[in-house]
Amino acid sequence: MTVEQTPQEEAQPQIALRTPGWGTTATILVLCVLFAAGAAALVYFGINSRTAAASALAKQVKEDAVLTVSVVHPKVGGADEEVVLPGNTQAFTDSPIYARTTGYLKKWYVDIGTHVTAGELLAEIDAPELDHQLQQAKADLETANANLKLAQSTADRWQFLLKTQSVSRQETDEKTGDLNAKKAMVDASANAVHRLEDLQSYEKVTAPFDGVITARNTDVGALIDAGANTPARELFHLAATKQLRVFVNVPEPYNRAAQNGAHATLQLSEFPGRTFTGTLVRNANAIDTASRTLLVEVDVDNPTGELLPGAYISVHLKLPGRAGHGLTIPANTILFRSEGLRVGVVREGHAQLVPITVGRDYGNELEVVSGLTMRDQLISNPADSLVSGEAVRVTSSEGSVK
Image 1 (tube, rainbow, N blue to C red):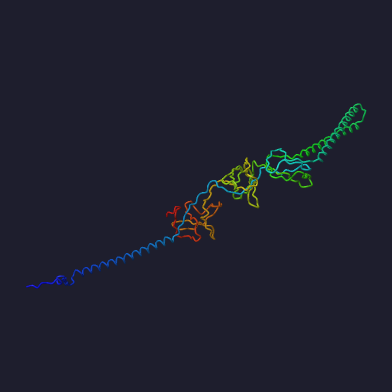
Image 2: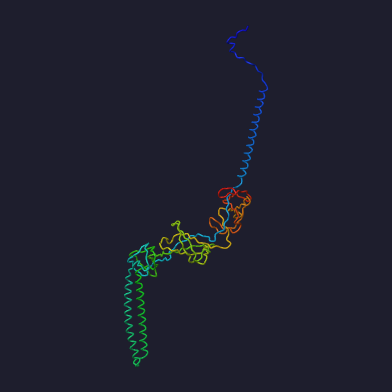
């Protein structure tokens, strides 16, 4: 007979007790091995990455320690080289106008800036004393002519009487001499009249050539004294500006540019972007010992009158080519050292300081007559600390490493 179970007994779970076995221990060992392997991999990769980073940093530092430079090559100077010199413009003909007659200014007809032609009336001078002198001289001429007629008739009469032996030869010679004296007096009186007529013509002041009035130094009623004992007073100043002269002092080293007939290019600051052409017409053919320059004259046409006398002008003269001319290098490649001029040349990855001999100075460029070849690589803007044998790295103008 079985005993029936109560509901509480049926609801209680039955717990089976188990003891640990081999499966659980193996799992723990595998996990430990995997953890150790992961830790070892982390340590390995960490050390390796740090080593690589340190190596890359050392390499970068080493590369950065090498000086990076840009280079240029020397070039052969052109067959025709140019020198720019300052010059001063002057009117082709420039003349002060003085009075030749003493008197008072009656009227003037031109002022500054007036364009006049040759023979044009500029002013009139009132000289009454001169007019009276001329009248007296004409009267003296008439008297001399009357005396000449009388002496002529007397001499002819005595010549006729001499043929009949009515008068002596001595008396005839005296009458002939008196005739010659009267002729001389007539000539003298005529010359006096002509002189005074010329002086009277100077009462009208005229322009001697075509030009423009640049100064007027008188006015109506001013005393005009043309005497030899007092300084002359300038009435007007006249300048011919259709053609101008430009005088340039060419330094002695560039006197080869002063060839008569050569063309010159002229530039003025008031005409930016414009050029004018002139011709070198003459030079002094002598070096000025004070300035060591050669004075040359360049003529330039000025039909419109836009170029003004007295202006400052830049004159571009061409230097003729010469055999065996040197190389040309930029001025920013020069190093000034106590032992002389040097340039940095890149040779086999290292900088070498090379001494040079300089010829002419063109401003931004220099002529080098010895020390370099066309194949040399010159360091642009070299550092003052640059020394021979220093390692350098060359970059092109685009920045790519060569």
